[in-house]
Image 1 (cartoon, rainbow, N blue to C red):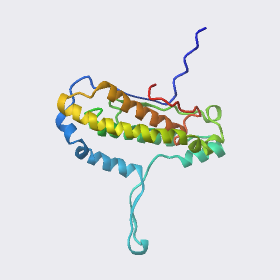
Image 2: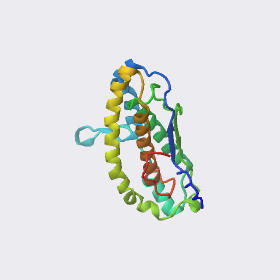
Image 3: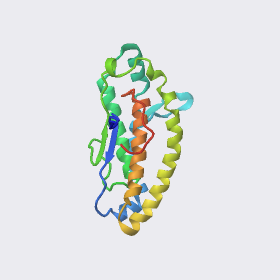
Image 4: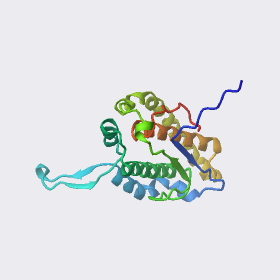
Length: 212
């Protein structure tokens, strides 16, 4: 009897392999070239303040970040997920992925703030009453801890691979495909955990794997 294949996980991430020589010059100085877009990402991803004496005249320079607590409370108490909150989370996560892709040398295109480029991220907009448990958002962060522990080591390996790929691109102009697939897989895994535990778009527990 044939065992049916499991349904694809609803949070999906993929990246086109650059089947052409990569730019060696921009690869060599990638960390410096990324500084402007990192500043933009920082401005929309976190709170920062400049305070005066006794906190008088404090100025907010940036605000933002993924909306996690608000959607969780809305799901628990109202069984709703405001669409504009979902759209913000999806756009910010996609932008963050494009920046990581650039830093990880996976593509040469400078990260766009509002275009998909070669990075494909799919997040389902949940029908909360039918798709999500009302009380699960209160414990998803706890349930995701095993993933977080494993991802610490997976991401460490990914960083080492990026360093190896840096040398490979400088000498050959190519990102070795097995190394590329591992880094993309690590990003795919991380996106699943974020979508499950923080953005709260699905109750299906993320698989412990790099591939789709």
